[in-house]
Structures are given as C-alpha cells and as structure tokens.
Image (cartoon, rainbow, N blue to C red; front, side):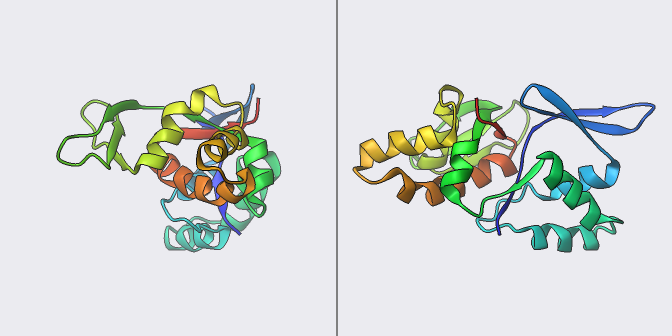
Amino acid sequence: MTVFPVGHYMGERHPEGLHYVRLGLAHQTMTADEFGVWVLSHQDSPQWSLEDVLALAAKASLPDAESAAARLLSVGLLTTADDPVAFTRSYRLEPLSVGIGNTTENPDTYLVGLPDTEPARLGASAYELWQWSALAPTLWHTCEIRAKVAGEAPADLAPALLADLRPLLANSCGYLDTAR
C-alpha cells in the first residue's frame, strides 16, 4: 500500500519542541519521532510503502515509529493511495520552488529548485503537473485534463499521475494538501 506525506511543513517551535505542519486551513503538530517518520515518507520511489518507511525508521533508530505512523495516518499527515481515483479526488498539489526550465542540450528534463541548491530534475509529465498544479482544485482535475488531451479515461491516468507526484514531494517541489 503506497504511502504519501500530506501537509506543508512550517517548522519546529520552542520551547515545546513540536513540529508544525499546515493541513488545509489548520495546523497539526508532530513530535520529533512523528516528524522523523513523516520525513522518511518523502521518498522518490513509485511504490513507497508504510513498511518501507518503518524499515528506514528502524535503521534510523526512531523509537515508537509504528505508533508515530499510526498517529500521522489518523490525523491525515500520512495517507495511503490504495485507490488512485479516490486519492486523486481527495488531494491537490501545491507547488513550491521555482521553475528553471529545460535546456537545448537536454530538452526532456526540466529543472525546479531554489537559488544555490541542487535543482530537482523532472520528466515532462511531472514538470507539467508541478507547473499547473496551483490551478487545479484536485489531482483528479489534472487527470481529467490529461484524459481530454490523451483521449483516455481519467481513471486510467491516475496511477501515472501518482508516479509523477513522487519526485515532486521527494524534492520539495510541492506538497500534498486536502482538496479545495
């Protein structure tokens, strides 16, 4: 079961030592262990699962990773994409970073990043998702637009859209939020 992180990280606040994430119009808090699990869920792997996250948490010696993951799932900071159509109807991508574009030498790779950092290198489909995501109220809307262009059913395009989403989240090009 593929897992995705949800929410926009707002930083750690002291003296409590809690990490804040904006989800929709509300803030959620995370302990240090929960934050560790949340960060580990940002991997660029098409089928990144909760089991993969927990295995990395064990290697990182995060105590109570299972209960941290359970809490994050219960408050919506982690979600699974068992049903790609339901997932794309429930979430939207909010873009972050700056588009740098492509080059004559490598026209099929697009760069997104921030000054003085290594940019993310994206394929055309992931770049398009990032580029237009601010206009789409849901990921499903994006599937519908892509379906019109491709002459396919939107539901058939949802799994590919989730694969495009993974490098965007892993490279902090955007974050998942609840549908508008």
